[in-house]
Length: 467
Image 1 (cartoon, helix red, strand yellow):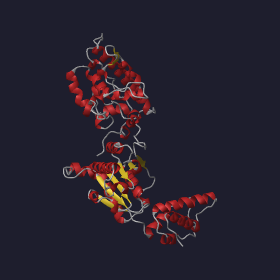
Image 2 (cartoon, helix red, strand yellow; image 1 turned 90 degrees about the vertical axis):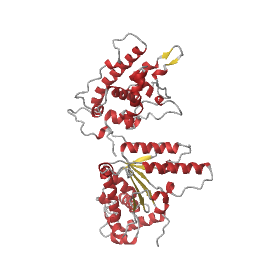
Image 3 (cartoon, one colour; image 1 turned 45 degrees about the vertical axis):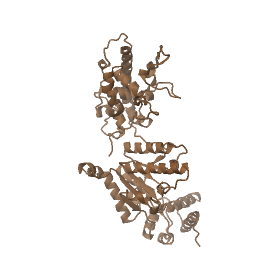
Image 4 (spheres, one colour; image 1 turned 30 degrees about the vertical axis):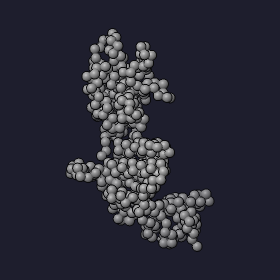
């Protein structure tokens, strides 16, 4: 379930003055960077057997954080980071805040006319400074002491808190390169969170095909059948009590973690809105997967892009919403070409990630029959969003108009609800058109005639012609 990682969610960060949180962080970081610089200098002096007042880097006492405020100090204190872990954390932040600290490691080995292998680090295009690697972290803590390297190996490769929380990815190496050759740097998406306490929000891009769903509406605005409302409540109950079911009641041995639901029904019936409301009411971010961007022309890119979404969703406990899932969850294509084979592989990868995801996944489809039969039994619920009946349409119309630009008093809203069997989504398109027209013409109300004209135009877009 939800991991305690996002610093901004810790409400016990107290502020005794009006200073901005970044002021507190800057004060702490200046001290941490000075300490890191001294440790680096001492490590090199010891490594090259130069004169130094220290016999070990352990003699260099870290800054005292007692009474310090700000998200950075709080992160260290909350997780009780030890001295070695504090060094690893500030090292991973250096490329983001003060890259010149690592310039001392650009020293060349004159015997071979290249940088020292034991220092680790990478030089990347577009960045003049040294990017630390896990080897750099190992050298900082252990130098060339093999016994200490073995002691720190587990910490640096898997046990360090930011690794477990996905903030540093030490498994991301090229080919068969050694594990310690992986970049040792806080991932870009977490930097603001650590430095300023700002909550992380993933940005939509070609290699991150998901965007956050927001809504200003409430459950009262979602007009659905009672059975649909009860089924949606079941998902809310799982988000609230699922951990109790799996852990406290010890059913986790028999039940897979997570909750998978299928929303099916015609377009405009409230599937996306319901997903957004589930997130809003449970305090979870909802990310909508853009399926049009998941199939890449580069083999393997689709899996990589989806992996980013699932990995971050698991770390942040997002709700994932796959809209228009018909395109991926239909019957598998008969393999007649390499493209078909890779397409089926991508679908298989996505199905497996969804099945293994420990959080809430919602798939939206226009037709239930479009979903692969082999996958339907893996859903915990299948919720139908039906076209609204007359009463539901009447309620939707009543709540759709702006208070300052209402429907004309002579308009018969019930008659409109009876005569036009349209979805809530189409209604909002109609309201948009009518409201814009009324504002343009400086009218005080929306007439029934303009409403019906707009309805007919919307229906024409869908190929429906009314007499």
